[in-house]
Structures are given as structure tokens and as C-alpha cells.
Image (tube, rainbow, N blue to C red; front, side, top):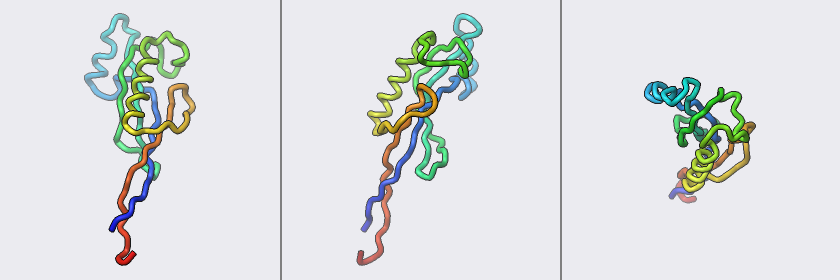
Length: 126
């Protein structure tokens, strides 16, 4: 017989340069009008129940940026599409079973948790 034990996965939304992830995205990022233009995206990085990072990343939609990502403050709406991209990712995460669990240091750094069901073997006769 097996008993269920629940543990949790953790996810935090981060902002990344869309060109950092693949050579194709990096090649295409500066193609838009004006050489200072590139693309950003929100991603959800997943952490294992023991706190180790996993390879699992949920990618959001890309949107253009016109400043260095370290200088970006999403409260300044001069970066078109960031609000829609963030809201779309948050809705998708919640539909996928992630539960809001606070905020990180950045405006966009929403945190989520999700239970992971693991089966545990009970000793015979239990």
C-alpha cells in the first residue's frame, strides 16, 4: 500500500533578454527598427522541493525593450507589451495549477508554489 505525501515545487517569475536563450533568438533580437531595440520576456524558473534549481523554465511572450534590462522598471509603461506579457504568463501559471505565494524583490517577481504528489511505501502490516 502507498500513502501520499505532498511536497512543493517553487516558481518565481524573472525577466530575461530573449536573445540569451538561443542563437536564433539572439540573431533576430536586434532586427527590429533601430539598433537599440531588442526583446525581453518573462520566464518562470522552477525550483525543486529541496531548493535545487531544475531545468524546467516556463517561457512567456517576448516584447520589445528600449533600455538595458537592469534599468527597466515595468511601472514605466514605455516598454510596450510588458503588462500583457506578464499577465498572460500569470494566467497560464494559475491555470496550470500554480498557486500565488508572494512577491520577490522586483515588480514582476511573482512567486508561486505547486504541490508535487509523491507516493511513499508503507511497511507491511501498516
